[in-house]
Image 1 (cartoon, helix red, strand yellow):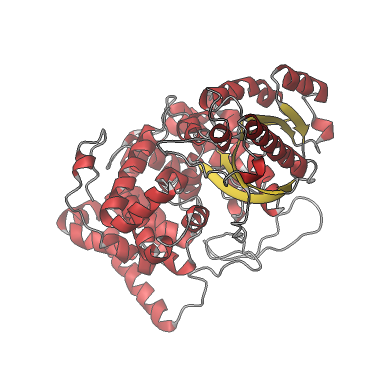
Image 2 (image 1 turned 90 degrees about the vertical axis):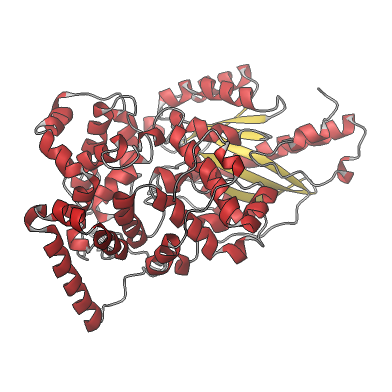
Length: 217
Length: 344
């Protein structure tokens, strides 16, 4: 891990999860976004990893708390607890391995079973730099994303392509959901309290989205 | 493992790598390894004496070992806690884990598993091979002898026990063993550990639902509260739970991200005394950093719990501290819990 950035100056705090099959590049997407690092020699993730980064959305500082999870099916026993309270998710597959795209449907179900319906989901086709090995077409993925009403982007953590965009888009969309909810609720979004830190295992686990849209359910 | 310069890059100009005494590629500006400094004449002589004692204790090819353990268990325990001499580690690990006996009882079985059986986990294993100890020279070369033997051991196990199959994390355990013994020996040691030849079977850590990991994390949480109430309270307030930092400690027995010289010392004790040393080392780490940890907010806590300072990772400081953590009456809540308390 690189140097820790103490950054407590933010307007919103959003919890985001990175999920998808083992070996699709989740950890490298996160290290690219949080520290601008990429490693061809990274270890497989055991359990969960964590990183943060703040970005500007409109005139607000939005801080993302991102949980990176082990992709192997058996680890869901541990990792699924981390979906709770997430307001955004990057569901990653590997454009060179079709099976990782086929499994997206199961990941999506897993996510919808464990999270709030307002969660912002982005389907991410990673390793787009490996053009000669591509096994999932952009069109197929786009069609799937439309059908499932998720956002979609292809990325390359190696070439640093679209990584920033993918995370920024997710955070911006979450921000929109939150401010829209706030408006519906009659609040001034600018006067909102700081987003709540959402952690696993808390008793009254509410997400920033839910907190603002408290009257919806 | 001797330090050496290797040049096995397959393509491009040959770039010599510097490796430490365990075979890990040195980072240019990385932290200094605990044992890297040159040894004094005094230390050298002390090590020579230790090795002589150990050789006597083991006998030729391990012939005197069992008798010695039976006669002087406390001497053995004390010497193991001081660290098994590196040149004898592989042999002693096989003796104390019970894997030597398994090997002798099952001639030809390993070969059978490797050659004739196929595993449903083959692709999963292959995908993780280059992601296991990627900075070690033995495992670095694509399709080299290290990667091949790691694959073989993991595949053999996934066939040997199809319920467990292959689970991420097992590679670090097998990889660590392979640095000290042959493929077949490493396989039987893995069997001894997971099937519980001497201690509690580890297989529950890798079975569907990871039940034993969940149990250990639950118990660890209680032990933190019991041994360090102030820190336990702080963790609760900051909503930190052990799955955020300690899963890897249990699943790979500290071999995933801890300095290798520390991992080896923990493994010496782990193989002889069992999983309780994992709890104790974990508690000792928290204890050592206690006064810093109680001041940190959530994010800094997570970071600190994954990046312990170098002095905390010194085995000669950390391990005595771990051994000093004694069993004490466990709280009522723990005895009423679905999991029995660990006896430390």
